[in-house]
Amino acid sequence: MKRDLQILDVTLRDGSHSMRHAFTEEQVRQVAKGLDNAGVEYFEVSHGDGLGGSSLQYGFSKVNELKLIEAATEECSQAKVSVLLLPGIGIKEDLEDAKKAGAKMVRVATHVTEADVAKQHVELGRNLGLKTVGFLMMAHMAPIEKLVEQAKLFESYGAEVVYMTDSAGAFLPHEVKERIRALKENLSCEIGFHGHNNLSLAMANTITAVEAGATYIDGSLRCLGAGSGNTQTEVMAAVFDRMGFNTGIQLFSIMDVANDVVAKFMPRPQEITGSSLIMGYSGVYSSFLLFTQDAAEKFNVDERDILIELGRMKAVGGQEDLIYDVARQISEKKISV
Image 1 (cartoon, rainbow, N blue to C red):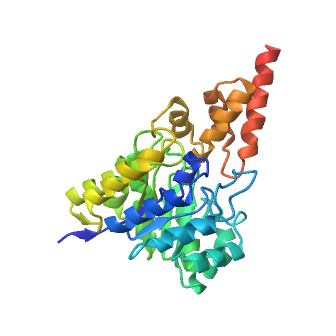
Image 2: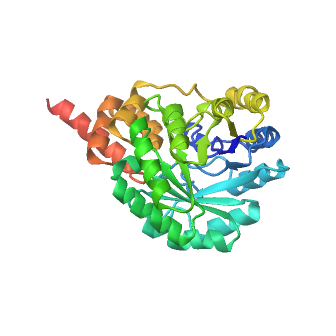
């Protein structure tokens, strides 16, 4: 008998980073319809940095995210729309509006050491009747004991699933195994894993997470996502079927939406480039990639130097301004030499 496994697709949220938050309504409708037809139960729609993320700091959306949530919902007969909410970026009203637009799930995301800022947001999600998830980002920046402590906080607030998120694509498989196993042993709720492919380990890490007890895993079509992208949804559908899991996803259908829809509007293939490789190597937030490329060009410095320094400084999401400061300082050092 096959074991159930929930694959949540993040193409229309994490992919927003790679798209510079320029998804059109038609693109969202086509992807949503394809995911629904393929049997995906949950997929995420919002600005790459979550509800309320459209701003000068993170990049403006081409289309209002509430309109995109509504459009995605209208295309679905069985699939449900999820949204991401980062406390401090998104506010209570954003989540209430997303619920009205059709969202059925919220994933409340914090830095791995800051789950305590999410209590009211998790409680609001539950009160709104949404499937409510805790999302611990940049999980490589905390020891196992701290990760478990913060996950327990999310669970105590009412999170039905708690994710360990490899935002930098920095984990090695044995590190994923140790952490997911610790979460499984210490929590009663379900465990999720979200990977990035900066070290070419997204699939290996996702398989390891499932073998260690994760029942929710994230993927994106054609790997469309920040940095080198996420674990590839259509590949996961094939691999986990081979491994004896029931994902509910029809393989040919999910391949069709990946290749016939998403591939046609991707700005570039999701490859492991010099910059995204250094992100995984130095543990830098994957969504910093395009900002770093812009800063490197502006100040005529090597992207890799910027990323190594950001990794040394342990920069986290929300510090995008720091990227340009670091690039300027590197440029000034070059001139002085």
